[in-house]
Amino acid sequence: MARGLPQISMPPLIDRTLLRARVPPTPRFHHLEYDPAPSLNTSTSPGPNNHKPSTVSVFKITQNQINTLKAKSWEHGKQNQLQHIHHSSCIHMALCN
Image: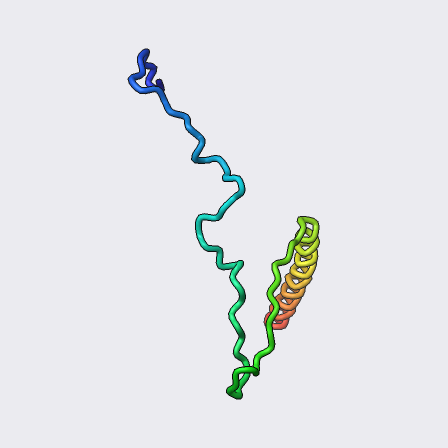
């Protein structure tokens, strides 16, 4: 077909059943992010009831919230960059004098 031959001994098989999504979707491997968090042993004194229960949450963040965080980090990063340039130029001028 690609070489322009008139006869094809075996026509191409376009079977996309393996690529379809399963209904309902079922994961094929274990997802660690959904396991319960391990206990945090921060107490120095031994004892079975010294730990406080920890809370684990998966947050749903919208695209608008992500864009807001990116904008805030850019403003902060730009300010840090300007401070660094000012500091470096002051050091350079002090060394040149």
